[in-house]
Amino acid sequence: MFDLVIRGGTLITAGETVRADLGITAGRIAAWGADLNGVATVPAEGLLVLPGAVDPHVHLEMPTGVTTTSDDWASGTLAAACGGTTTVLDFVEPEPGQPLLAALAARRAQAAGRANVDFALHMTLPRADAATLSEIPAVVAAGVTSFKTYTTYEGFRLSDAELLAVLQAVGAAGGLTLVHAENDAIIQAQTRALLAAGETQPRAHPLSRPPAAESEAIERALALAEVAQAPLYIVHVSTARGAAAVARAQARGQVAYGETCPHYLLLTAAQYDRPGFTGAKFVCAPPLRTAEDQAALWQALARRELHTIGTDHCAFFCRQKELGRHDFTQIPGGLPGVEARLALLYTFGVRTGRITPERWVELCCTAPAQRFGLYPRKGTLAPGADADLVLFDPATSVTLSQSMLHERVDYTPYEGLVLQGYPVLVFAHGQLLMQAGQFVGPRGQGQFLTRRPVQ
Image 1: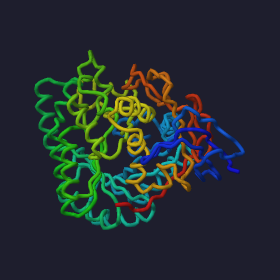
Image 2: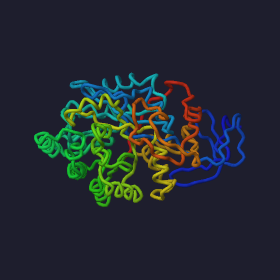
Image 3: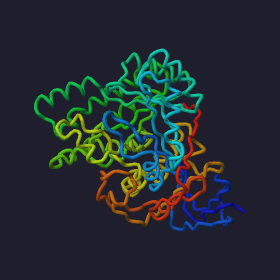
Image 4: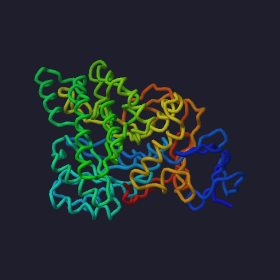
């Protein structure tokens, strides 16, 4: 007798699709089978039963100079749960001179008792001095095994020598280095030229960060990782050239992973040409690209040359975007998207035949858990895994709008898209979190997840 049985659903994992009952005991998956008996039973005939999705890339309650992202730990994780995401990975950004472990403790305390789903953290490395590098093994021992780096942005940008040192230190500690890869010199030169020519509106944003800025920086980071003999994870790949660079590294035998995001798969730079200042809503870095880049990214996902889909959820109200009304470089960069990812990828990936149902689950659930040391606790329906589940109805039709979503922001970049298939029930640790589009679970019960090294 199980505590809970999900009866008669179609179970989808990264490896197979099976019609079966799912038995849950003490908050964990206990068994698959037929005619299982439970204290409580949830009928799932006609529904797809998936592992809770894992979003490897979100920014909640993140300061960005003069403002802060509009979604905090409470609102952002509630929205995640309503869309079928039961684990998020966010970032620690140490203050100047702040020890890494102190920054980690402060970020954990900020989320404690407020996160509505389980969470893990990446450690950002805005500097690479000897003292900082010496702290990396202790951060890994504390359960944070991934480290974010940047090749652009003042205050975060690392030189080639610094990035190489980070790759060596993180690799030696058994960790994984993430990199935001854009060529800073190209961005600065393009930006100066655009502003000098009076190009201050959002339409100038993609011109300031051309595809070459991404592809060159990806190639350079991969070369440094090859020399360091360290694994590398490229966040938010947006171009055909960037995806091809990751694929070539894999063909050489490098341990190199690529992530892309729904907005690069579904939106184009045409959004920046909207009348007035409306295009500011779509400013993110890297910027939205072309339909040709979209097609190449979908193909790379199907060929397993890109490995995960994260949202890079970084929400700002329209009034916050207004900070850049007279200078596009001052528009806070980022798009909301943590809630709709799973359904977007089903409609525009699975239903179009671009990816299989199993690949959908792999990209949104299993691979992020594997890459960041959460598997097999997360991202799978295997016995022993946390009972984080999504019951997804492929017959439910939804027209996306800001009003139906739970993200704390006054727009969605996907307004008006018609989705065929949407989550109808979401569980975490065997406890109901979302039903019929509403969060019904306990508030603030999300757990901090310590992780082990994975390479």
